[in-house]
Image (cartoon, rainbow over all chains, first blue to last red; front, side, top):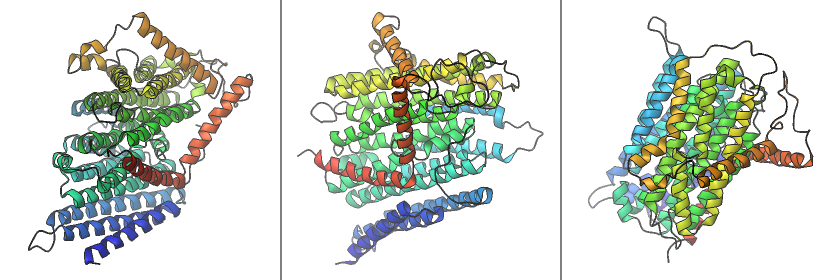
Length: 106
Length: 503
């Protein structure tokens, strides 16, 4: 087994763990962490692909790395926005549940 | 598309002046400041979605759209809307990570993400199927196609009217447009007819469930939000109709034109409807459908906008939805997929049902004269009406432009008139069967008793059906069932692409 395959398998495991967490964990913060794990899995996969697709004489294909850094920034921004929303939610309702709201009369 | 979006944004902007406009010498409130900023952000992100030709740029554009849309949901800042925004955010993130995974796989396989280059390079093989299935499932989660509409009704129902109009008319169209690009432009050789049938099947389910649950709502804004769920279903009916009878993607242009037309028609009409619903709420101080009697006299222009928007969505003759429906019906005939003809015609009857329901409620004479009416801006009412009328007149513009003129029949010819009347009659029947209170029951005052119990056995049976639909909808909108259905859908798409692959 070469090193790219190892990384790709590792990425699969991370995506799997992340998906499991997203579905099973009820707390929004845990869901967010699970999302980040899943995202990391995708990033690792992208890195492995960059290594595999390297042109002769280069360590890695630079395009995926450039895309990767953008994707990481996007994921970071998403995490920040979600945490901010979560903090506001806890501030205003003192709970952090995502359960369906009861049907309100008006 | 760019032009249509610009038009809708202008209309919404004019409307929002009344809510969020700030005179020059007053300090701008935080909600108003964020609203204008976010409106521009949504507009910019959508333009990027429409002009970009690279799958990764499209990913960034979609994220921008989500980041602009989420704060719009919780502009009011109450706990309820914050929760809706958080659900929207998390589910959209789920979708975008799946999309990114698909894009990464495509890059790994073909070494490019540029749409024309990729379209030339892509082969029907497991890698492309997996990527297409993952990306489609992710995008459907962002578009809120049934059964992935977990976040849509609370988010669109809870946001301020000017924000819901943006969300419902524009934000969901971004990811829908991307599904369209992906299936018809990037991978026409990879997509299979059976997977397209699944997608449109979910669309048909969305029309039925969305409309029935819409009829069961107590609040006007939630009714309009569920009508969006149903109309999203309509947008996905074009996919199987791009294939001809033997499963080749032969009728791509017609399906694409119909889809875009439908999207523009829905964007304009739904923006108008949400704005009108917001005005009704602002003027009456509530938007309980049962207590809307007399609204038509108090707010004639806003109510007219609401009804014109609904009629335009139904696909009555000069509207854009009519032309889109006509194009799809022609495709359905040509490819022998008669079942989609049924769905297209039935969907119009469902739409007619909630239009009739609203019409009956608002036109009724109030029991007591409406007292505490708050004044609402005439400009806002006119903006809502203008957008609704634009949707109604859209087919004229389309025929004047690129499409053949023989698609439009004479609106007063017996056949067309008969079609329209049938739709209305079917709609009235559905509305009286499924609405919360019997259609012509006396207006109720004060706290409404539940009207479900009265009526004959037939009505009781249909009401039970409606309740069952509403419960099924609530179950599907739980987080666990929604995310499981997301995964199942991704797997199903993969399987169907594999099975339907040309040998």
